[in-house]
Image (cartoon, rainbow, N blue to C red; front, side, top):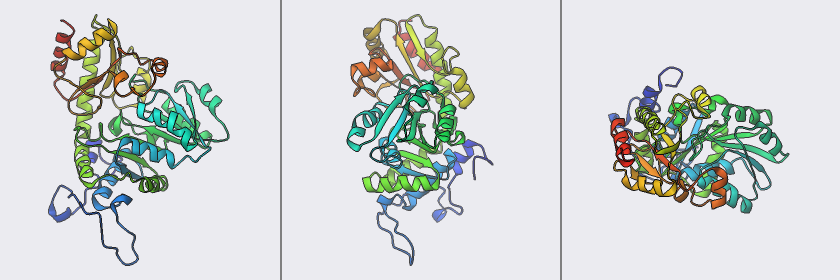
Length: 382
């Protein structure tokens, strides 16, 4: 069963499911064991190698959803990103990083990379001239996010994939914000696709996990580094993630519908200074997002009129969303990136990235859109 012969909703439920089912159970079991008998002439199945039955089942499903040959599940999104990078870069190599990126990834590339020996060149995801200017004989890879965090921008993803192919570079993309429901980067030619599966893929705010997908050869190299660094995913978390994947399509589409309705309400409200959501026609990347994606996602950001004081007042007044730093769950979450996802950046770095102290990021859940809008209306003094 592949994306070529069934729709995504069906694929999410049935991909990688064994037929006949194990013990006639329609739910794949948790193989909690870490030790497995070695068959004559066979390899070793071991939890740290990410090849035990529950891990393999999950990884086969993840590969099917992203349209990849293979996948490896990791203990966190950062484990996915760091091992994907380690599988491509050696000391002395350089990587081109396009656009604003997640704070944890920025810390890895801007700080830890110096100790490892990687060179990092940050470029504008919309400016091909900046990509060419950053290219050196030591450049080995390009890294980008499908939708940036927290300003919800969509770079020239197709152009970056072409640029990578033309120059023999490995292209790596973080697809957390869109999920494969809305965007499958391998179809554009991206070599490695990473996710924080903690977020939308799982969707229930009850586990930490990551994933990397790609060709079998590339994923085997990622798996090697994951094994050495000890970032394998626990079987129970793998079970929960595989369960979450089955409702991925209906969750992502419901969240997107809610996010668009809320973004339109906020854009029209006099108490809101600006709204960042690619589903709005006013968004600078609206046309690109509409062309690339099968929807606009659950994430939006905005600034209230009145600055930081107004932002803090609004956060205290909202009743439905939780004030929390994650995203992609069934419950709506709201936060100020300056004190959460991007707190490790300096004030100067945040200012250069356009992340003001009054910027609010909203992860839209599956609550009724009418209730979310009413909650915002009341909090804004309507």
